[in-house]
Length: 223
Image (cartoon, rainbow, N blue to C red; front, side, top):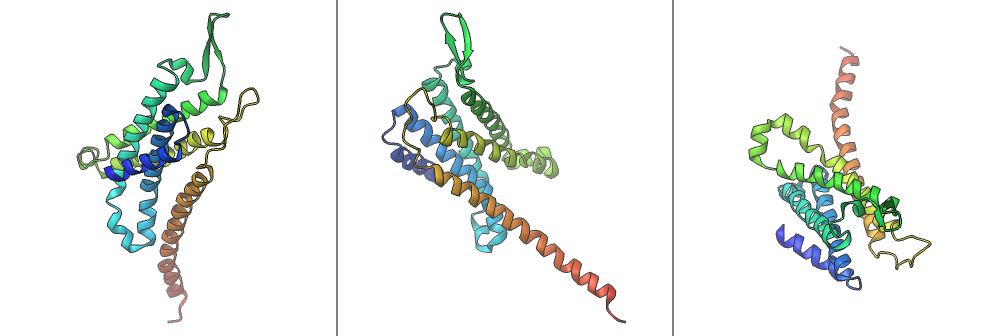
């Protein structure tokens, strides 16, 4: 999983090779993190749909943990290279020397980063409890309830990434860069995860209906 994570980062860094170093590695870490979280989201449903996929189900936990580690590195680059440790800038504010105060400059930037911070805190909580020790201490039911947080984590991550892929760089008062080449790959990844989970859900409820329908037929069968 470590090799996969490093390989994903290098691939995405190559894709973003024309960007400045800060944005290049910032985006490479973010993209790789999202793929690993998507892998963690998709392996369970895939194993439910295809029996051979059970063999790789063990990597679901590790993919989530590595996704969290890459997200932490991504956040670190944002703090150091983009907002330069100015937390007000992280939420879209800029210092105005004439007013001697911070003013809102980028509304969407602040909201997207607030969503990203929420996703990161949730990822840290889930990664820190993704162990057999945590399962024993929390109990199986308590641990499963906590790990269901992967669903809001996924959708918070999707919302955060979607803003920067499709909206942040659209501005009438400054030059607009070329569209990110990964925009539609991102859409495909989200649709794939959603499709896998939906298909697994339908298979699960379909499997439960069969014995129920058989029981109903037995009740009405002639004696």
